[in-house]
Image 1 (cartoon, one colour):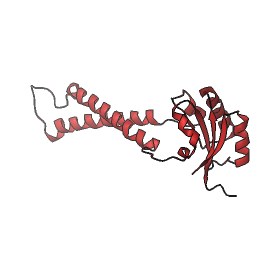
Image 2 (tube, rainbow, N blue to C red):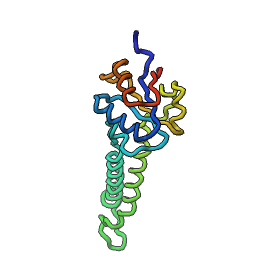
Image 3 (cartoon, rainbow, N blue to C red):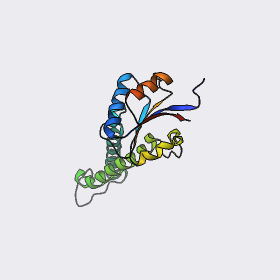
Length: 177
């Protein structure tokens, strides 16, 4: 029998501690293509699932790029493109460049955060295979789910099911694509 119609195996847990324990155990067993679904953020769940967060670095780079481009724009306009002697100050008067540089640093960082958070999270996502699981409706209320995908190299239907059942979840079900 082929697994083409199966997205993965989902285990339902009653507490965040059980989900954290299950995620750590699954990562320790070698599963890498898995995800956790919770009604509220759980500190450390991303690390337990083996996921890394690149957002802080991207936002820092966006801010630096915004600040550098603002400073370059002001320098080019005042020194190269249209040098104008205002009150005997030098053309490259860096203290007057600081407010705009700060504002464009913040703008660059915030736009980077907005667009990359949408892009990296895959939003908008009107459909996900987990929506096929009737019990998944409670993931936004009071249940915690761990889903191991069939695309994972370690996935074997029987072995993965027995592993998930050994974690004592409320239930383990196959998720249709």
